Each structure stands twice: as structure tokens, then as C-alpha cells.
Image (cartoon, rainbow, N blue to C red; front, side, top):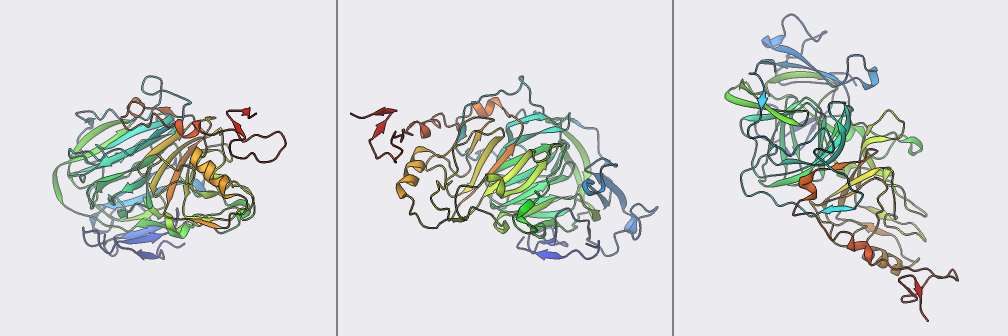
Amino acid sequence: MDDHQQPVIKTNGPDSSSPSFADLQYQSGFHNHFSSEALPGALPYGQSSPLLCPYGLYAEQISGTSFTSPRKLNHRTWLYRVKPSVTHEPFKPLEPSHRKLVSEFTDSNSSTTPTQLRWKPVDIPETPTDFVEGLYTVCGAGSSFLRHGFAIHMYTANKSMDNCAFCNADGDFLIVPQTGRLWITTECGKLQISPGEIAVLPQGFRFAVDLPDGPSRGYVAEVFGTHFQLPDLGPIGANGLAAPRDFLVPIAWFEDSYCPGYIIIQKFGGELFTAKQEFSPFNVVAWHGNYAPYKYDLTTFCPFNTVLFDHGDPSINTVLTAPTDKPGVALLDFVIFPPRWLVAEHTFRPPYYHRNCMSEFMGLIYGGYEAKADGFLPGGASLHSCMTPHGPDTKTYEATIARGNEAGPSRISDTLAFMFESCLIPRICPWALESPFIDSDYYQCWIGLRSHFTRDGASAKDGDIQNGEKED
């Protein structure tokens, strides 16, 4: 699409000429080459770095990939700003240190277990806590230093960030709010994210998070050394799953204000550093490029499902994928389980029992999850690592087979679960394993699964077989 023909999408959320979050406008598309200017003529014409930029602005490029990456994978954006981002004091370690963020997973800061893990929703803190203060790592693998790996974080917060901005030098953030909207100001403009939507904040962008609804809680996936992209559709064809047009990118918005003592908080190698400057980092008057923050409304996802028999693999509902160099193997997939129809005949319709070479972290935004009748709550999470058995709990299994083969079409509604799935084996942080919100009785949900085996090949009736022994 041509630079100057991007569609502008209006939604309920900030306007390009006001600091308020009302009448928010977006550009539409996924990894398009976008152009946006908050003042007419602020974008240089015909070149990216003229001797003198319009309005006396500074030209600054942010590169999300190496200069020589293949063109189809090359991500970069030119920013035209009041002052360049280099204008700050030296970085110093954050005091007091955060201590609950990890980007290099080793046996000194995390551990492994093949046990199925589940966490109840974490309480919103009572003391004032912003997004950065309330962010903590649950698990992950690999290293941001080696540019390969991932981390899964959660956050709980109750106040907006004040006179500070956050920058993640380690990787891309994919943010999944579960409670409370997020107003995210970025160098490219503003985003409003509600539960049921996601935001992707690429590596290196500075941003600040406001909480218009007060208390907020959610999940964050971080990938090192790669970026999220749309999955290939293969035999599905040209349409379905997440449509590129439904991804929304902000339009330029800037503030030119004196901000004494403004703090840039930079995550670098999993540690936090701070630097002072005297101006807002959100002083970008215009920009063009294909490297920018974006949002996506999960209700626009077009799911696929079995229409005759058997249960499809969850990969059929992949929204975004961060690939590895090995075809078909993801560093991290973001998969959702949205409202949809179940129509398979003579089929066990909930997810099947499974041992997977991939590791699966699940969260629940609202409603219930079809494979867990109890215990898996909105705001909670579960982790089933590589080759760890998992599947429907006892109540779900018994209720499903009780309905028999004549069950008609049914619609799963009022639910939105998701999964972060990775080919790497996660290490779990000690504060996650020692959390008071860990469900130590999670394993009990499967203990009641009894044997239905019968030697004559017919379905066993209730009471025919208990604990693997045939009745007299």
C-alpha cells in the first residue's frame, strides 16, 4: 500500500491533537509501510534524512532487524522528533532493584519441573504499583543476550506510570490484559487496549501505561531475537484466522513539553536501568516505516474447527507466531480459544489427552475453559511443559461421555482462553513456584479418572470397572 494512502480507522479511544484518550484513530494493516504526521508537511518528501527536516525536527531511525535482513523480513522506522532520544544522562541501575524480571534463564535463577502447574488469579496490590513495578516473570527459556528465547510475565497494577517511560531492549512484548483497560502512549502514537484485545510493543520502543479503570491485571509474552508474524494459512487458503486489515497501528501524536526529572526505565539483559532527561520521549511529530506498535481485537479472529469428526489441533487457532529457523517450529505461538460452534459427530469434543514436545502456558481472560470444569479461573494460569501429560479434568470427561454420541451442535460462548506455546522447555522462577497463589491440588483434577476398559469391546457401564479391577 502506498505510504500516503493508509486508511484511518476511528475507534473509541486518543485523538491526534489532544492528550486525551477519546476519538482515537488508527492505521490499518500488518507490517505495512505506514506514514503518519501530526503536523502537515512534517514528513520529509523524497528522502528519509535531509540536511534540514521540516519544522526543524531531528531524523532518527529505529531498526528492529539487521540492516541486511531480507527485505520481506526487514523492519525499520524513521522518526521525526523535537529532540533525539540520545539526549539523556547516563543509565544507572534502578534503585531499589526490581529482582523479579529474568531474561537469561539458568539454574541460578530458575528451575525445571515436569509437574503440571496451575496458579490462581493474583490479587491486585494494595500499595501503589504501576505497570513496571507490577511486572514479574513466571517462566521462560533461552537468553536475550544470545538473541534466542522467550519469557512469560504477568502483571498486576493499580496506578498509572508517572513522569517515566519504559523501554524493553531485550525483545518484543505481547500484552494480554485480563482486567482493566490500558492506555499506552508510544513514540508512534497512542493505543487503547481492553480485555479481549492485545498489544504488541516491539523491541526498543519507549512507552508509558496509564490505567483509566484503576486496578489492572494481565499477561505478557516476550520473544528474543525475532518478531511476531502472521502464520501461513496453507490449505486454508487466502482467508481466515487473523486478517491483516484488523491489526491497528497508531497515528502520530506528540507532546513538546519541559519535563524535569523525566525517567527512562530500560530493561537490558533482564535488569532495569534508569536515565534522566528533561523532556517527554513522546515528541515524535511524524514517522514512516514498518516497525511500529500495534493492537488487535480478538473478536475479529475467524476460527476454524472440525465439521465432521475428531478434534482439531490447537494450532489451527494461531493468531501470531514468532518463528525459529526450523520450518513449522515456533519459538512462541499465540493461540486463542474463542467462542465457536462444536459440531463433530461421534467425537470426544473437548481437547484430547496429550503429551506434547512443545510446552504450553495457558491463561483465561474471561468465562470458563472447555477442558476444565473447575479451578481454572479468569486471571489464572497453567503450565504444561514438554511431554508432561495433560487434558480434560474428571468432571469434563465424565460429563462429555454421558452426553453420548447423539449430542447435537453446541456453541461455546462467553469464554476467551489463550495459550503461549514454545518449542523450548521453560524454566520456572522461584517466586512463581513459591507463590501463595499456586494451586498445589491441581493434580487432583485428574486423579478421579477411572478405567472404562472392558474386554468385550463394548462401552463399560458405570461401576463395571473400578481402579482397573473387574467386579465379581
